[in-house]
Length: 367
Image (cartoon, rainbow, N blue to C red; front, side, top):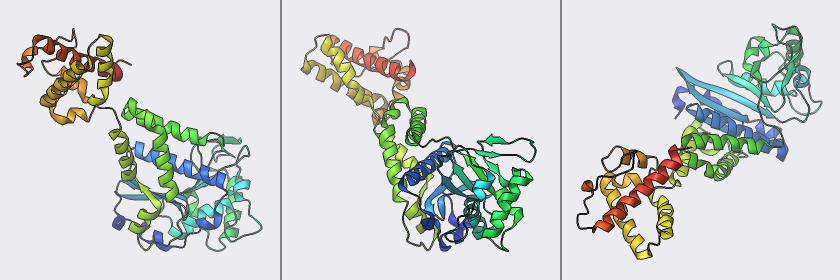
């Protein structure tokens, strides 16, 4: 976890008046904002970052990431748009009504003015690209990646600077232009929820193919957690209190994944497949139950109860022991401690173990 005492800029973060509530968008735009924020949190978790993500406080999303010698503080304004592109003039356009700052770029720079140049970025995220000319280019182009104001040509920079000077009279510092960034995110207004669910499916499949079945409940849980972090207008006194009320951390996402892992099928869960095979062969219920009891008793002796918790351990447990070989799957019955079993029962026990290994191997290793 990020240690707040190491964050000189963040120490004052909860103490500064929050302006996000003054710019609260309509529900559709707000739903887009929350889903884009969730996707950013999942990306940070996937990349192994230690982070705290604060929702709808000071800005749409504020992320504290532990990097190297110290943490990075990034502010994100999330803008959904039905127009084809953004331009420097459009970002600089000032509303005739309302409080300062009146432009979109001005609202982003407000965070720089409040927290100073120690922050990592004050960024605008949108579903539409920026149409602009880079300082090293001659022609206008569409830009999807993160781009800072300092990267733009002089004409585009001038349009933005004039608006910022009007929003922050006497307080705007041009040397902070590199902190102002724009980034297009790959979410359209019709299917952004499906895109986030797709990211979750990929993340869970990378952990275990069977976990993908839990993608929808994982999304619902994450959406509920993110929603609970928004709309809280209580002014916290410390970073710890702020984190508890309106933030999600790496630990929170990891706990959700642990709950998904707990739902995975274990060895006992695979027995229904083996049982169906025995029923098809004409075995009676009492006989099958005895086989199951003997089989599970043996598995407990082999590797303890841990084997029942982790499905992926099953093939390894058998393949590294004399009871099973990949070629022919002929176990050494001498290692089975149930000496009193009749020969037929021993053979049924061996076959049940074979079947379980066969189904698990096919499920996890023969795709």
